[in-house]
Image 1: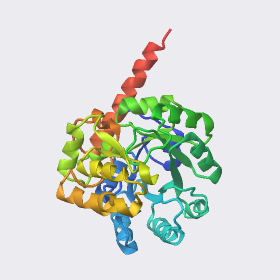
Image 2: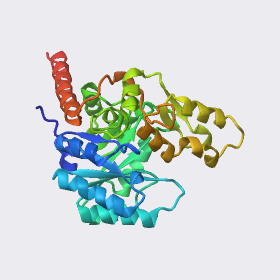
Image 3: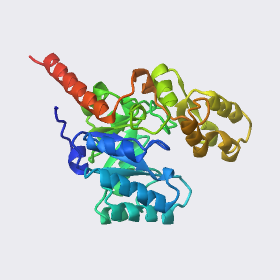
Length: 327
């Protein structure tokens, strides 16, 4: 298998410059282990484990199944003080051998020294190049910039990956990772061409065999196109890209009401509703976060096959470009 050695692979200790996204309610230990064993960086998400003992058990489960690097996602809500709870999660990560912490939301500056004190690395996810530069100043090891195509929370500035990735790589001296529309080897090669050092992939790994979401949800991704996502929650300044399903339509309709609040929308958009839908297989309910790259995803297969195919296709893409550039 070809190698793509970058500063990302060196700093994070992984074989290929591929990291799994946070995948709220879908970053189960089995998927994380499969991705790490295949040479990428697998991840789980603290939002899946509100109980600290359950979280520790999940981390131990992952660590017992692979010696390769593993990551934990910690999403921080702006203007909400989660400091004490985050410190508890970080302590468990440090004690149980997690290698990388992925943060998003507000500036992680207060947690950077704690993370480094445990010997862990930190990757911070941002929506715009100016935020990437701020993260660099905060001392993170790598920064991920995500474009408008991404599942979850892209920038409200509505700028696509092609531009934000290119500019972030231009501005930052630390490794820049790219997310948003990245699902195959061609997009990996394009990210490296921008000057990025690797990619963060979410939606494609939802269709991994090891991912815990229902088969109905995986089939929904395969059956739909890049036109079948919508941006919700703009009215509460928490924009999110999700599957265009009945729940999304209900959310958009409620957002038309003057003065709508987060609490008004919670019955539709809550993580609990999304988790229940994943378990029941009801693709019409819950905020099902998927990116526009669903139009490029055509099958369900093991995480290792997804990664191996990406690396091989990226190598073939680079080889083709080298031939085009020959004198």
